[in-house]
Image (tube, rainbow, N blue to C red):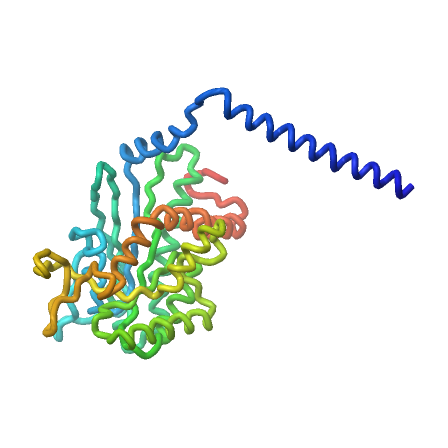
Length: 336
């Protein structure tokens, strides 16, 4: 009986192996029949993207005076974010966090991008900042809700306007000591619903040793609190992804300097901040990590930021809403 079973299993194994071998040969044979043109899909996608353009929505969060607007303007080399001055003595600091957004269409190499910058004036500026992250969380979820309502309409738009927050730059004050409780609470709650990228603002106020020690301390605190910023380890698709993302995770939080002013350095015009001992060059990797942040956020991971927003954060929100409402009926009469 045992011998019979063994023969049967061996036959099944050999049959399976033979099937795989034949399938492999067929596939190899197909490749030799001639050019099909599948590789043109990339060019087709490129042409379509150039015609329609795409959206990218970035939120900036941090205390007043950390250079949030300046950094975003430096990232995109244009005035895409309104600069807000610090509160004067005669002005009242808003009692709650305000949400302000401004959109611009920027174009490079024939590709159009509608960039929306969402600012959060008032965040962290109170004596009591308890739960000041709630209006921000509410805004993010409202954008998911808006997209969901459009998605479940029977006669929905061909292209649903995307106002979802794809990336949140969180500005850490360059104290050189440790994260504030407010920093920890914000990132702990918001990392579940949005891609957070932490940056140390105005890092030129720290010495090189202070900067290195502060970055290490922040990483340890985030790990101890179970806070995972973007790119999250669980979303690495393969070993190549893991290798690239590990380098980024080791560099976080990015120690940055922003400036929209140019200075002459060694015969070249450079963006920088002038100090008593020279010019801090924004795009010089020996001076700060601005170029590392820009390359990561725009040149290598911009599309992934959008995909993680849609496939992870939005889908989590959508599943919860459908589960809570048992069908999610809207006033339009549409149901999922």
